[in-house]
Every structure is written in C-alpha cells, then in structure tokens.
Length: 318
Ligand SMILES: Nc1nc2c(ncn2[C@@H]2O[C@H](COP(=O)(O)OP(=O)(O)OP(=O)(O)O)[C@@H](O)[C@H]2O)c(=O)[nH]1
Ligand SMILES: [Mg+2]
Image (cartoon, rainbow, N blue to C red; front, side, top):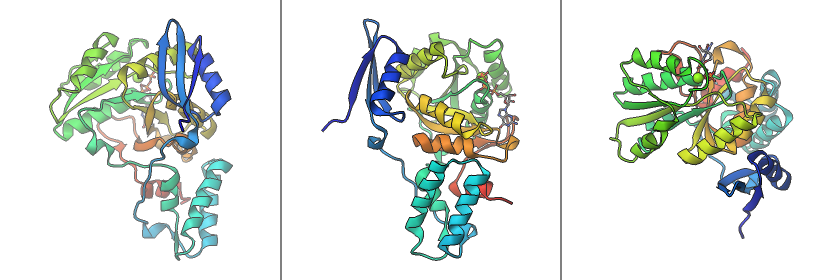
C-alpha cells in the first residue's frame, strides 16, 4: 500500500503548511512538481522514511559499571547540552538494549539515534556534487574553502561554483580563498546547468563544490529559491549549521531544509561553544548524517570528520 500523499496548492508555503497539517510536522517531501502556477508536493509521514544505521565499536573510555551509572551519564550529558526530553528519552530507550552486557557503553546508543559518517570526505564521489546550504552566516563559504583545501591536499581536482551573488562581496570572499589555492571560481546561476551536467563526465578524482547564499527559511522568497534550486540539482544537499545555535531553532531549521532534499550536516564554530545540543538535535530530528565539523575560521585547518566516540568525548563533562 502506498503511504504517499499528494498536496496541491497555489504557493510553496501553502503546500508545505498543508503537508504539515495532513501528515504532521516531520513529514518528508519525496517529490515536487510545478505546473500552471500550482505546486504539488508528494510527501510521506516520517516513520516511513529509511533510517540510517551505524554500529561503531564501543570505546573502553565510555563504559560504565552498571545500567544506573550509564543512565546517569546520559541524563547528565542531555542536561549539560540542552538536549530536550525527546532526545534524552530516545537515547535512554536505545541504551536499555545494552543493559544485558556489563560494563555498559553509551556510544552505540547515541550512534543509533544520530547518524555519524566520518568517512564521507574520503569517499566523496565525482558523480555527487558537494552543495552547501544553510542559514545566513553559518559558515558555508569558509567550510567550502576548507573542503576545497582538503580535496586538493588529497591530490583531487575541484570545480567550484558560487551562487552567492546576493551578498555584497559574497563571491569575492570565496574567490580570494580559491586564488590562494590557484583555483578558479565560477560565479552565478548561469553556470549551474553546465556544472551539474559535467558531473557525469568528470574524471574520477574531480569533485564539484557549490556554495549558496544564506537562506532564511522563514522567508518565502528564500524558500522559493531553495525549492527551485533543490529541484534543479536533484542531489542531496549538505546543511551547514553553527554549533552554538539553540536546539529548538536548530531542529526547526533542519526540518525545513530536510523538506528540500538536505541529507548531510556539517557543524561549524565548535570552538565558540561548550554546548552541542543544537546540531545534535537537528541531526537526530531529520536523520541527517553528521559528516564533519569545524573549530576555527582559518581555512587551512579545522575541518575534521566526526566519529561518535569523538562526539561522546566532546559531550562528557570534563
Ligand atoms: N570561530 C569560528 N568562526 C568560524 C568558523 N567557521 C566560520 N567562521 C566565521 O563565521 C563567519 C561566517 O562565515 P562564512 O563562511 O562567511 O558564513 P556563510 O554561511 O558563508 O555566510 P553567508 O554567505 O553570509 O550566509 C566568518 O567570520 C567566519 O570566519 C569556525 O569553525 N569557528
Ligand atoms: Mg557565504
């Protein structure tokens, strides 16, 4: 039986509202269509989406002598990092599956509710462009330059496009980072089609990188841009979120981006906060794969993959 529902409305925001009313706040858009000024969204309820899985090795550092000590550790972490009740309840529920073996570890259960994908950058394929999206000022452009630097250091070739012709100096910012790496920058939507088409014929080691303007998801014009853009690129997008966002805002923003085929998450500014509830809540709410983090504005350093063990290390109180 198909659980897909089609909703048609005269604008994107009306269609989204209707989808949320009919299928709930967490509904997932699987297809979009625009015809005669009408928007049709095909959506499914959250529980029918495929979850990502992860089963990391348990680090001996994060083992607790018994179930009670492990429960206390998880509750303390959730408290310290402003991870809400839903997050905490789901983590504890998952943790309870590990109570039959002593000592009790807490990493497997975290990885079961937040998908970590630390090998992403090594495995990134020529066929799939890296497309960074996110709210204004979240660190997209600096992150794109960091990814470019890492790929070049791995002797891979890059093709870089920015669509940020909105912010004064937006393209120039990226251009100056790329000039330091002796790389060209393509600027503007006029190049998008050709760049996307080239993905099929690129050599194995070449990767397409696309930077986008800051998107305020509360703004209808920005929503329309994201709708058109995600439709045109037809590849999963990567959300860049600052780690110092509060968890409720981060989750709401992630849910809105998820509607538009956003499937990966990079967090920036890990150096300016000690509370990491924001991006973890966002990742869990939409099963976004956490692929990397940044902890400095300096381009040549501070792009790291993130394993679940490292995450627990960050979360545990010193
Ligand atoms: N401390 C710190 N600052 C960062 C980090 N990443 C980015 N920044 C700073 O955050 C600010 C915004 O970074 P950008 O890369 O320009 O952000 P953006 O998302 O491209 O911004 P818009 O294009 O305006 O939407 C800049 O001052 C960066 O230097 C980080 O990991 N740590
Ligand atoms: Mg930018």
